[in-house]
Amino acid sequence: MQNIYKLITLESENEHDLEHDLKQKRQFSEPRIFDADGDLDKRWYVYFSYRNPKSGKLQRMKNIYGKTNRFKTKAERYAILNIYKKRLSKFLKEGYNPFEDNTDRYRSQQNNKVQANTKAEKSVVEQTIEQKTIVLQKPTFSIQEAFDKAIALKVNIISATTLNDYKSRVNQFKRWFNTKTSANNSTTTNINEITKKVMVDFLNDVQLRTSARNRNNYRTVFSSLFQVLEDNDIMEKNFMSQIKAIRTKPVRHKTYSLKDQESIFDFLEKNDKLLLLYIKFISYNFLRPIEVNRLRIKDINKEQGTLQFQAKNKALKTKIIPELLLRELPDLSKFDGDMLLFTPDGFGGKWDTKLTNRRDYFSKRFKTVVKIPFELDQNYGLYSFRHTFITKLYRALLKDSSPFEAKSRLMLITGHNTMVALEKYLRDIDAELPNDYSDHL
Image (cartoon, rainbow, N blue to C red; front, side, top):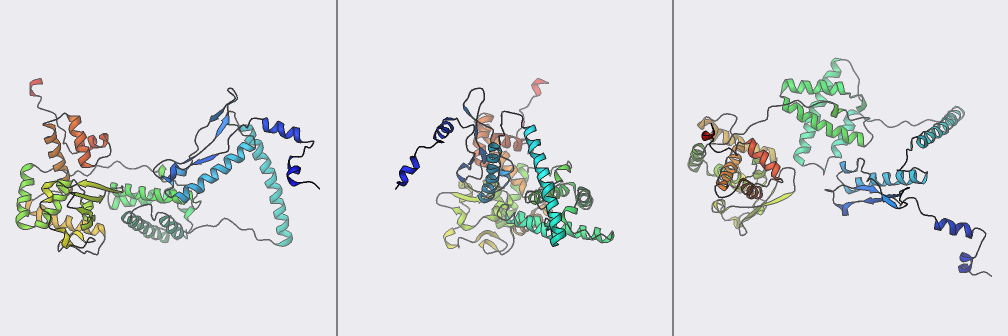
């Protein structure tokens, strides 16, 4: 009777060959996935090494990214990277070599596949004739189904406000498209029947009815949605990148003069103290109006003198509240933490409406209370106070420091991510002006 352990190590006629194979150097390492420890802000990829024919050593090859980092969830990234990993492993085992031209190998392989497919197709035809087999085709999506799917896949990736904007623009397109097809007696329903020409006509209609800026915004939205459809094999190709954006004149929020700013503050002190406090959050904390409308009582830490807010396209950020503004805040302990700071009825309360509606309300209130009496044109608004006070602060910092030092301190206060971004912003609002150059003329 043979013991199993002895059987495993029993010499055989193939033992020499086995030892020879073990001594052979592997030509490549098994492909692996780099997932940055789950950090979705970093790039994920597949990596591997291949033996350099000159040095004889395993050499790390180029990382494989593909479409991986377009996806915003871990599950989606792991899914596509596993596909890349399996394909790479298959190619390597079939003899593909990153140090060589694999064209002939690929063509030969494809020719073999074509021959195999031809035989398979012939077999299917024969079986269909004999057994009347029904051949299933690739499923198609209607325009409605495709857009519903694209928007559903955007949930948890974009904000609720942006998602509603996407839905609104899709509905506008569907109404326009239905009118167009009805007039032409067309029965187009398949999403792949939406062509570049169709979208160009739609964008032209938007531009003529509204503005070039709005037309460009529609282009951006549909490019994003069509990319989702292409990535999920619902749409054959995202052609929106082939449609160029139109150059537009940027909206300019002018800064107020010192005299006008002080006059407005004095006027509001007597006529609308709530609106004045709202503006001071924009002015002293350099927040955007919509960021002020997001603020709730629990976002303010009066003891530490800080506030938390959701910045544009970013997670929660923390800023200090200058003493100048802290002094004007009431006792917050008497308010529920979930109450909004600003409502139509006063400071601290419930207001069941969309964020954009809250922002629009204060914009209209400012227009009625300030813009009309002061005869301010369209270039002046709530956003102008942010520009005004950043300009004022920057010029004050310049008095005691160099431009670089002043910008470094200012960047911490305004929240700009880079010096380049801050410098561009200062140029755009004309905050950075040269000294008098009369003596050089």
